[in-house]
Amino acid sequence: MPRLILLLAIIAVVYLLVRRARALPPQQRRGAYLKLALGAALVAALGLTLTGRMHWVGAALTGLLVAARQLLPVLVRLFPMLSSLRSQGATGGRGSTVESDILRMHLDHDSGDLQGEVLRGEFKGWRLADMDRAQLESLLAYCRREDSDSAQLLSSYLQRRFPGEDNFDSGPAHGGGAMSRREALAVLGLEEDATEEDIVAAHRSLMQKLHPDRGGNDYLAAKLNQAKDLLLG
Figure 1: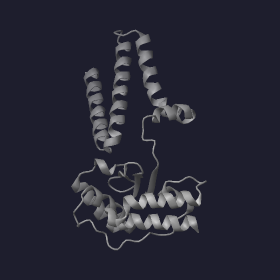
Figure 2: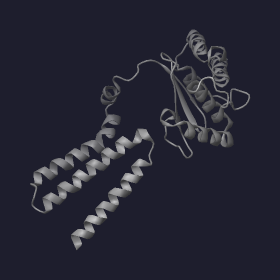
Figure 3: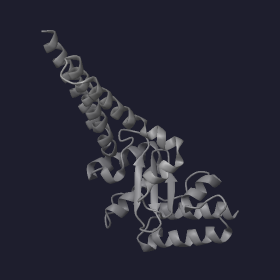
Figure 4: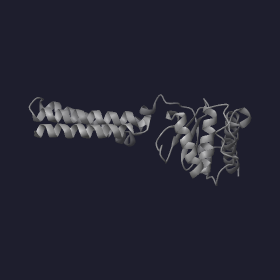
């Protein structure tokens, strides 16, 4: 009977952890499932060791494997070289970042690809690319209620993802509130030591990708102009 109770308890815990993992944003589920699998392996190894079916060395190796997996993010932060190796293969081109209260958007300068992440609300942690049409429309309604800048930003993304549709408009575009120098540099994808020529060149290049006359969006074009004006004083 005690073994049956223990087994049922383990099954219940696993079920709850799986449900929790399934509720995470898609890009976080893989890591959650991996942690769950490693935890299950560790529990199984301990159980086999305690019942005499596995040598203690096997349980120790399993524990080391789990510990190594958990410590990997810490090692990456402590050793920048590992971080650079880990990120090798990712796009090496520059990108621009525009952030509002609800969304963070990133534009790849080489491909012109626009991607976004939700910072708060029901879909916090979700990437826009992983959301379907109904979820995006729900998020747009939330942005319209909570933050006009976020609504404009999401509208920009939706107009690019669903070209030719006009039901994503969020009203007249504007540059948003006050912008800091750091934000302006992020919008244009520049470093702190950017020269006047760098600023003008980055603005011109991005406007070619985002200007409304070229299939872009009024709001993002306004943000680019605001960033340029601030940096050039």
